[in-house]
Image (cartoon, rainbow, N blue to C red; front, side):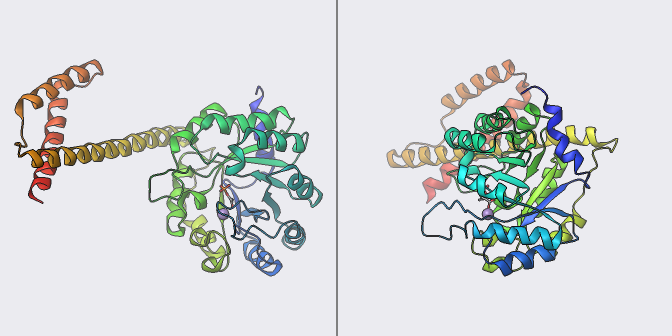
Length: 360
Ligand code: PEP
Ligand code: MN
């Protein structure tokens, strides 16, 4: 991909206030629901109205969207409110129908980006279109698949491109529905610095009370826009009920968010600082996870020692570990004083864990 600068054109041409805001329900449910939400979002910061028509659901038997019928409702939204419209497309038939019904922006969902076959089918179906096409990150934390999806579209002559960061699924339970892995979004920005990047806090958090904080982090990291699932009665939404916010809450959120203008002379400094802070946060989380894993192993050792009635503290082994760590630390530019302090603290915590196991 050579001329990445031209990729920003569609966003710059919109000459909107920063950030670009896309909002609307997870799913189009009924004509009344779609139009009621759209009217509540009219005359706000929202410039694109979203609604899923074909819904990719992890398990069968759930609401899978109203289908092509919903495209007529999106046409009404545009006619009645002036907002542009967007929906998810996942195959060539969706693309054809969405374009026939004047949908302005098409996004490709996380479950499609994972498949190069689907991405190629979509690229072929969209070839040469001047619609805006946004590619969500794949469900798994694989930057290359995300970049590959963008490249397939670019090679098919689609110029109005962008990306949506919606977090990544993990086997481990976390406070997020899909962990943000901000460092992947940052790497994406570094690869395609001109490609508009939108954040989707709804699918990252899965919970409406966490949406604000994720939006703020995204803006601090210089994202170009936000896609926020919005419903007048979130609790009774037919899909993703826990993560949707009301149009009123969205308006308030846009007031409360600290929005940094790109032209702000401090923006570059802030961006770099936030970039580095995001990296530190990632590493800090990894340190905590590793320490927790180490203590779990210590618990196992405690249980084993208990079964054989062996003393917890074994100084010979401990001195060996310490000597090795000091040497390894030195190789990586870490002082002996620091390594000794750190490992004494870690060792103490391990002993506490083992003693606890033995007492129990
Ligand atoms: C959605 O936007 O409603 C959706 C299904 O998103 P994702 O592809 O990120 O899961
Ligand atoms: Mn959703």
